[in-house]
Length: 144
Image (cartoon, rainbow, N blue to C red; front, side, top):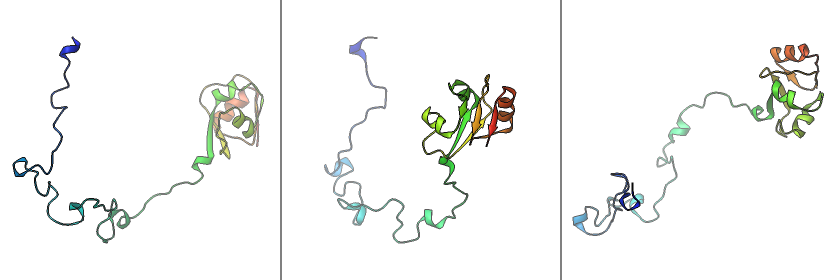
């Protein structure tokens, strides 16, 4: 391969559309915009989803499901993350200061992922059944 032989891939380059350059180009006179109307004019713009005053599709269709507003305020912590912390008394504030959970977190729950090899005391933190068993097996306790 030599630099003077490099070429773009076949079909990747094409000529720019030159509108308003005569009848022979196929895009003369109205330049492919048709006759009259808002979209034929310079600056002709309509809102995305606007259907000329008819009730738009996104408003005609029913809204389904549930979006939890508290989802962003709930945080999960793994056992391996707890094991890395240098302290044994762990609460939500300690996890925020360590950068493990967001400052917005209100509810923190420990999930069983990884291992914990030392005794820790959790205050104000929830734990799953498996995580609770692992913490208590390591000699720790959960005070809620």
